[in-house]
Image 1: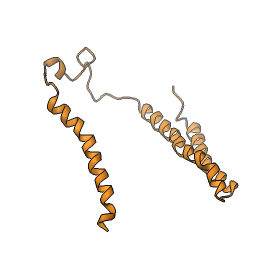
Image 2: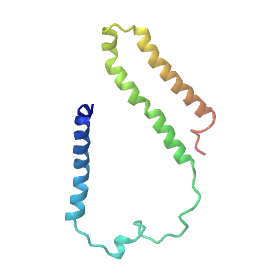
Image 3: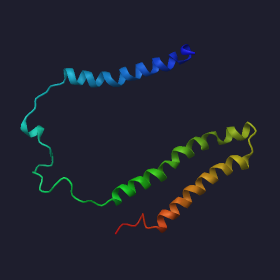
Image 4: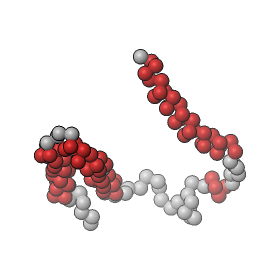
Amino acid sequence: MVENYFPVFVFLVVALLFSMAPLLLGRLLGPSRPDPEKLSPYECGFEPFEDARIRFDVRYYLIAILFILFDLEIAFLFPWAVVFKDMIAEGAHAFYVFGTVMVFLAVLVIGYIVEWKNGALDWE
């Protein structure tokens, strides 16, 4: 049973080596010349004038989450579009294959309409 997972283990070890090697080499071989300007918390050129805990508009996050939600549907639609012809050639019914994606899109459209009606996409 363990020998079945050996390729997975090798893949994980190689992935860790490829991801950690540049970080370690940069840390060991890279120059380190700290000065007060580099160590300052702000890089915009002026000292902070307010507290870091100021209130901000949450709509920025809401719009970002909605964008990710509705943009992610492409990640599901593209593979379906690529294999659509192959699925029908293998004997799947065209209405079933097409219907499953239409149900998926209908759920997304309903979610979009609900967000639109609730005013989540309005910017004042």
